[in-house]
Length: 321
Image (cartoon, rainbow, N blue to C red; front, top):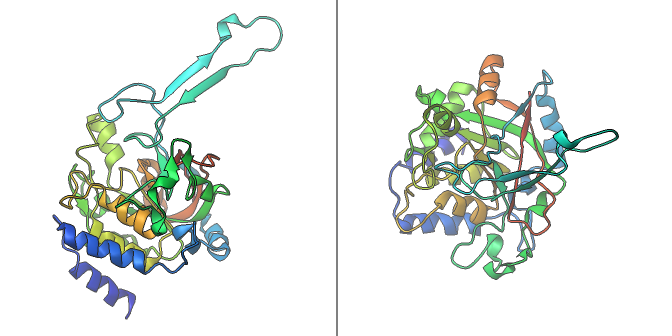
């Protein structure tokens, strides 16, 4: 079956809108039962990002221009960030500096898995029906962190070809409204219009315009209303062997399009497929740069913090064009 035939088949089987829980569970079981690695694996979809893919991704650098894909860390409360990061300065402060050497010193504490700050989800982050990815028991995550599948899996960094699919650009709107879902047809249309195809080992970034809407209209309760991917997209990403998935929202639509299942994209991506997710990225500058040069792929560098038992990490992904 050709790529075009396969895409048409997936698209026809993936109508937008509400998905019955039974259909969702069927997709879940099918995806998790067809993983190409064994029961001892702990890297998940990062297995698709081989040394050959990394070397090939270096060829994406044409200009040497770097762009941050992270939102600024905010330390004040807002509708979508009621428990913001705490950024404190330690004494002595600059006003106390006298002769000799003094240092400005900071302390920061933050909720990694919030609805505002850019972060990466480890494969231990999503528990579904009592299990983690690859059938590992949920109780391996405890008060001291995760015993397996922690973000330390990516301790050496994630480097590969990044691909940006700009869904609002494809639809001709500034952003997708909260509650709207990116469908398979949206993904295929953006690929056609941008003349690119996401594939094996790619770090796929899907823009819904969340950050632009937030910047222009102000924060809102994104925990209960946000644009994201429809779960019917995940089988396509599985076929394409995507290594990492990132979005400028939570990746999941809210309210959930699956009755009885919250965060269905997180469940399918992290739990079933072993796909690391990056939530609440910022694509405004990247989208502008890609449109300017007429190229929607780039070298992407992701360096999580060294948190040996962490269920995720704040992160500042960098695109290099």
